[in-house]
Length: 332
Image (cartoon, rainbow, N blue to C red; front, side, top):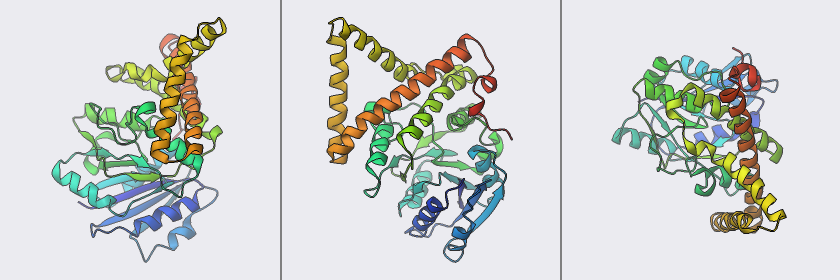
């Protein structure tokens, strides 16, 4: 197999520099190219690309802004490889990444795979806390952090592999964002393709994000899920309701505590205590553990609130998703 790394970028030249530097440190001799797709940026990364011309097989393309999904599709159309690996620009790649991918595909080939994300010691405390929240079994079931306890793994596009065959059959990503990842996974399943998690093909996902941006991000995740459920009801799961139920339960518990019934709120106290201890064990830092509680609150509130609003508009009012949430759809 010949691999093509596809990386869309929007106003993030510093991130591209770190990503490309990590790719130069691969320990394998497996052939690969890098395709950078500048998605209408006003801050170009072309000068960064020029630094790596002699170090990597790399190509650079500039196109009008049309969103990350469309940019990934553009990159796969111009790539020369027969297997594409899609990365976010804020990722740093371990030196044995491609070796682990090749080995796993040789042992059990699939046309689409996903890998987990992790945090480097150099990440900020907020980045580490958000990474813990996004990958912990206590918050997301661990599906972004390497858990294999899922019936069909839905790869995420910050670390996702897709064969040329599967891309051509599916036409790649749609124009919903976020939500383009599970949308593509489900369409691939319906076409007869298989997906899997390659647990040791992880990337260091930097997530240069503030608390406010994180809340906006997870709120969009929540809004996207009922839309996907309406498109693919056979893949709807009760687990998608958990953040919303957690939020409703917390509000109910606070109300009961106001009337002197504190049993319910005590369960939330126990949950957050376990979460705190787990983060201390993982991150070995009390400050990050405290931040992990806050990032979990933001995650559940943002996602749960977005999910309930979207469920009401999409499933109850039967509104058209593009009219109900135009911010989730890029115009091509």
